[in-house]
Image 1 (cartoon, rainbow, N blue to C red):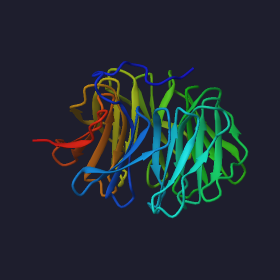
Image 2 (image 1 turned 90 degrees about the vertical axis):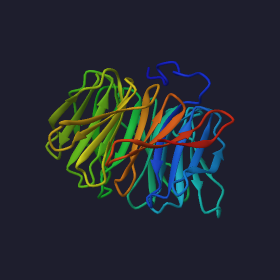
Image 3 (image 1 turned 135 degrees about the horizontal axis):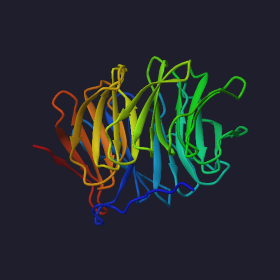
Length: 317
């Protein structure tokens, strides 16, 4: 069975951060941590703006709605919370089938969301009513990552069963099964044009898949440990990854060529996210920090500290 974290924290005085996501306008960054909190950071001054509390176990996944007015978080407490960031409505608490929920994703129209659970179930939900639909259940192990395609008609799911599935949501059937990884898949991402998909795995590789053919275009090798995070840049030209070797790596999305290796975290890199304008990259680490990287220089411009009892920004030199 898949369990997180797999490694002890590099610095036990810190609170591991497992997930990051930018609001669509790029003005706010959300992070979810081991101390049950969703932190909202202002990108104007890189200071803590708000703490969302309600979960009572670590938070594995956060995602903003496309309109930026809501945020969903998936937790080890077996719930998904949908937070109304306008303050007009109380948060909704969803209880997906299959127990522990590892991941959550909003559809492009913002009207629905998907969750992935420990028992291999993918479930769709109405954002406004919180009503859950029947499970899409074809994985043989935990669903670890989800991503909608830009047209909203296809959903990709990744699993500890070493496969990724492409779902036709109009018929709730599997369009394709992507096989090739030798270990559990921990993360996936869909390019903005919907023609490429990337998967990151325990086998220390990232695979780039051509769609709709479902064939491997490139095998990315370079990490010295489990690969936990993957994300396309907004223009689709770059791919960012993070993993157990404490590094963030940048790759050319077309060819899979390694472009850069960034070091700074003192523990596993669990999540990466590009700012909507593509000028910054955020990475979340086991070391209790969120790092903001300048895409032009490759330097850390800020370290957002999430140690227990201390929420602050450390400006990088």
